[in-house]
Amino acid sequence: MKAILRRTAALYLCCASTVTFAGKLPGGTGVSFLVGYNEAWFGPNYVTYLASNPSFGLPAPITIDPSDSSFVSTMFAGMANGGAKIVRIWVFTALQGIQLNPSKTHTQGLTGDLIGNLQTVFNAARKRGLKVYVTALNGGDMQVANTTGLRQYFQNLLTNTSERDAFKTKALLPLLNLLNLNSDVIYAFDLINEIEAPLNSGYFPPPSWIGARGWIQNMTAYVKSISPWLPVTSSGWGSAVQEITLGLFSGLGLDFYDIHVYADWGQYSGVTALCNRVSADRVPIILGEYAQNSHTFDDTLQYWTTYNFLTTAKTHCFSAALAWKYETNEAWWTYLNLKLNGSLQPDGSFRPAYGLIH
Image (cartoon, rainbow, N blue to C red; front, side):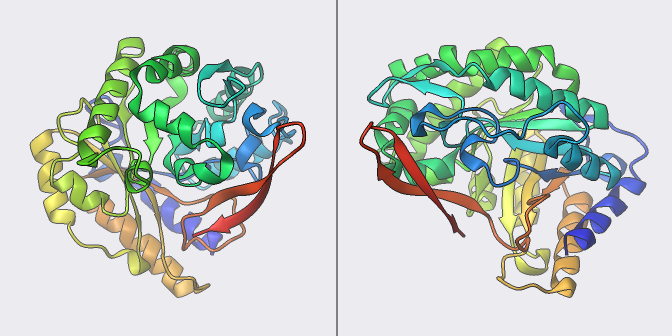
């Protein structure tokens, strides 16, 4: 099924003879429509795929290697050979690469391995002609924060001005400086994967969208102050089609919109109204994640789901579409996230146990 999806996606590159710019975002509708993949984390190493993770007392796995035989290079080569132009990765997955204070409530800085490993990823993408779509935080981590003991940290990050500023200067600034040095290989920047996760988990007081919009707007302004060239968004999932249509993402300074849709046969409602909003706001939009939704291994369903998603995106107002997820051995019909649970150890560290949630 992965091969079917890759071949179908590649068909849409055959006619892409030019690349235009929709605002600051590479690509556009019609002949300049781009396709790619999510490779949110490499292999099974969600918590430490890019750097060590002090929050869980875990060192980084050996997955980042500059040689062509490395896992990262192998994945990127496969994407490029299939016609992909974009790869989307997440940086601070489960707070990997971030140093917290002993009580796990405050940002102190980055681990020493994150920036170097991320540079290696950029080098590998550059070699294969891929643009990297960088996502900072994952909203799904905030849904399981009670289990992992990080609820207070995320609460502070989302609603406390002092902690938000600490995260900006001690974690986000070094990341943005690295992006500035690698602007030739960067596609765009997503502040947080699926803002609906913290919204639905009660982080923002009612009416919750006011708080969420304020956080997005504040963080967007900061990113632009450091990297004015960088296209910025905050991706959405679930009801994001309706949320964008209603204007909940409008007026925040975002350079483009990004929706994630999982639907059998690639059919979902509201595209016309969504495109009307995009046109009125004069910003591009991409389909940042797509796949079938049914828990079914079915080549026919997989083919037509992929075909219809890409056809609808290309013929409407979308600039790009990214499949979920390149290397997984699971079916492509679900949003996969690693649920962190486990137990505290006598030394105060956390030993996670992994399980998939859909």
